[in-house]
Image 1 (tube, each protein chain N blue to C red):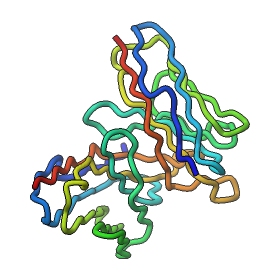
Image 2 (spheres, rainbow over the protein chains, first blue to last red):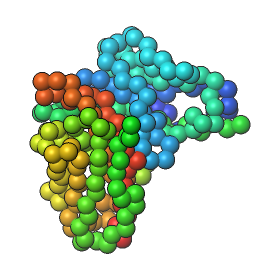
Image 3 (cartoon, one colour):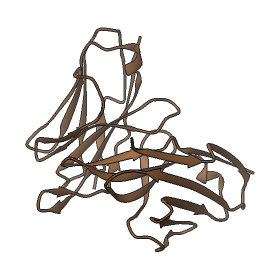
Image 4 (cartoon, one colour):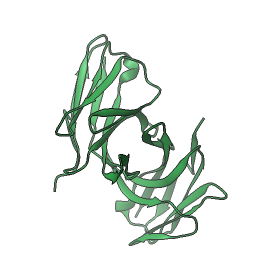
Length: 113
Length: 117
């Protein structure tokens, strides 16, 4: 059975701190790993990673994938209160003819002043 | 350009009733996927449609059904509602990668919050 495990489950940091969120997976027919930010309802797309060792960056956020060890990390530097959200990791795989996302339970990040 | 839209925003139903949720994908996207997100959990795959055909189905009972229309919008139907069907229902759209395959990047709508009492 496909498995996506995120850690920690929740995290409280002070504004300006750097955080690292972890995602490990066991999935057949792996294609890509995706990160989303969910504040209230709609998960917002952050990154899609397909190749190992290539860091993707967007402002203060960056992410990297290790396909040998089956994990990914999401880094957020100089955190701001607006970064408070649930961060979801999802793995895309082929299931029959579908491109299916399997999600972890998420990491709840709270950034305090 | 508008993102993925879903309606209604909120819905309250009683056990045994039927519900229809609607989704319009991003313009130009031909694939729609449906997910159920229970409080405190990640979204769980229900269906994927591409070009009006069902591409895949998750581990959900036959009470759940869906369809996609020629304009690529989609409906999710749930019959004989149970209390456990209370959740946020998310629709995601993705583009065509060519040769009938769907991009792995999925963009989500705001969801429909369904409460079954």
